[in-house]
Image (cartoon, rainbow, N blue to C red; front, side):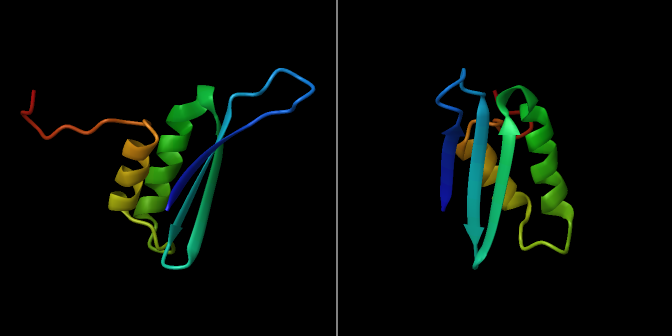
Length: 79
């Protein structure tokens, strides 16, 4: 399950904060980041994907990237 939510204070100009929620086999992952720091969010997802302590892999990261427009993937040599 993937969910995206935009947060902001109703009294002030909304901050460009995004939340991504990912659930896999009963494990819940939540990532909050400022839209301007999207590269840091991608890096954090990749860090989680290669850490064996988490039930999260590169395929999970790819799904999140594609579902939330964080990155696009092309096969080598593809147009």
